[in-house]
Image 1: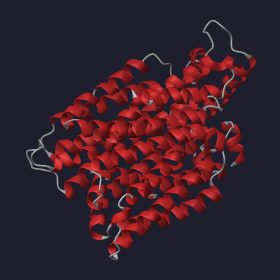
Image 2 (image 1 turned 60 degrees about the vertical axis):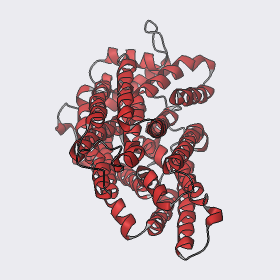
Image 3 (image 1 turned 90 degrees about the vertical axis):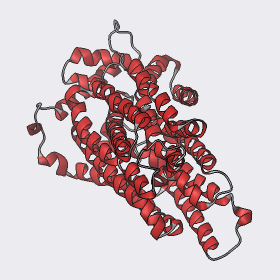
Image 4 (image 1 turned 120 degrees about the vertical axis):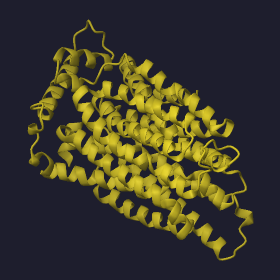
Amino acid sequence: MLYATLASKSCYVISDQCSMGCSSSTRNQFFAALSANLLTLSYGASFGWISSSYLQLQDPQTSRLTSGSLTKDDLGWVTSSLSPGGLFGVLFFGWLADKIGRKRCLLLMAVPIVLHWLLIATATNLIQLCVARFLAGAAGGCGLTVIPIYITELAEDRLRSTLGTISFLSFCSGLLLINVLGYLFYYVTVACIMIALPLVFATCFAFKPDTPQYLEQRNRREAEKSLKYYRGIPSKESLNEELQLELTRLCKSTQQMHVGSDNNSFSWSDFTHSKARKAFFIGLGLVLTEQLNGSLIMLKYITVIFKDAGSSLSPMASALIVIAIQLLGTYSATLFVERAGRKTLLLISISGIWLGEMSTAGYYYLVSFGFNMSMLSWFPIAAYSLMVFSGSFGVLTVGFVVIAEITPPKIRSRIIRVHMFIDFALDMSIAKVFPLMSDSMGIPAIVTMFAVFCFLFLVFIVVFVPETKGKSIEAIQESL
């Protein structure tokens, strides 16, 4: 219900950008993005599951594990198991999307999500939990690789970034949903409830056509039908001159992308010319910005952090407050991404994360020096909320939209796979070492380290990241 409400508001925002004559176009593109992102919603819930369930798994009275309650080392293994699955999902599903199409690949993604929740509901040992997390990661790798491509290929230039931000809105909705359910129900019951999401997705998404750009390489007539659907034109009507030009551009783009069906259609020069190199390194910088700014990894351990911090609120209540604020930040990004521009949102976002982390670190250092901070017991939650709001306002929302826009279409699928591989590899490493680092270094030192990274990323965005607001893919490529 929450996701549907926010989505309907996003649809209103998108519609507000259109004239009355394009409402059906807006509606078809929007609901295609929304249907696909039901998978992202389910992945967001999978991502946040360990945080919402850890306290129950840690308690011998509520844990169903025959091996005993989870230790912090076990927590590291279960949390980091998501990322190897993500690496597999990026490589396998990214390749599969070029072979069988974006639509079929996304429909297939529902299978590991369902298996994940079934395993969570029946798991009795640590290995089963790790396998379940691996499957969830595989689905996430698929969604985070294929859904941006799917949306980029079906969306009009003026709607592309707004539709792209729905992915992280869905992800954050999933985080909030799993924490609300985890607060209300036993984790086994939650897993049973969550099985319904991928089934709803399959029902909604099965009737959508694949993207015009993918279909053009196989059947121009099917590509034309797809373009008509996503532009809200009845199938019996002819394409107007503007859409004929758009279809012609798709033909040229697809001819460049698919000279042949084998790997020989690509040459090393496709990846080494100046525009491709620049797009790759900007994309790599945005991946590093996402993973090393600190806001994402601390979401995974949010209840653990608040428990260790001794907050006056319960860890679960604190987590719900912060995640609700994160969802607000993500929704704000959908409102402002076309008005303010991608680069502006990234700059505001990374600056807010830096301020939140410096404030958090300062608070903890004052506590460690013996200052009485009892009157400011609310401050860690406020600073952490600023950090999470800022991250979801730009860095975690817009980054992969920009990567998909600046990457040359011919090598887009492969470059996004490389970036997602690096993203999940970093995520896996950080997730595994974070509990150990928190014990050895302490939260203040870790947050300070992330703040230093944020400052470096701020400089990187100012100097290197281009503004892509309102530009066609061709214009973006020319500007690199």
